Length: 229
Image 1 (cartoon, one colour):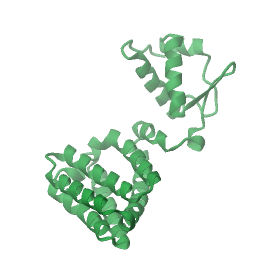
Image 2: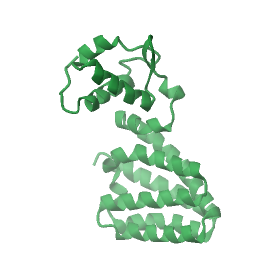
Image 3: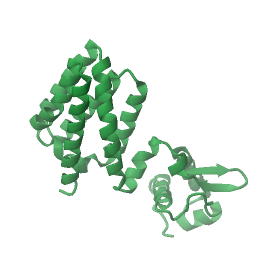
């Protein structure tokens, strides 16, 4: 194994171990080599290795049993949605599955928001939609758009929808620079999103569901079409 650079050594080792686990070099359910052997192979101290292990245990990729060893956790069976950001960073193939959930959850959130949004929340949605049109560049438009969707989730009154929305965005944000195509024109981005907000403000759940489905599918197609641009 190639020795790691000494700068931010724990961070670099964590990244290397995570990639090795997700790539299957350390099989799910199997134990990692003894710490002394693994530390020597990566060119780090056992203390550094233990710090990296601790982070990966918290991330849900490893589990350590005292006196037995450190095993690769079956994260696909036992893991939660909090693993999505690292999985998306590891493989772009995950982004299509994130988008599928984004469509179904996003449409349901819009429908629930239309039924439950308070007057104050409707006012917030209008203001956030205006911010999309007024954003100065594609990055700012993209971030303004995200805030509209966070507000829609809050307007459902269901905290689980808020957490799901946050999780999906955490998976999306690390690669968002490659998915910026729908946000290069602030006026067009505003026009695409406006029917969703208008239907929610009007309290029309069916129209909100349909508008959100249309919006999410259209932006997904633009994102994927522009991903390699």
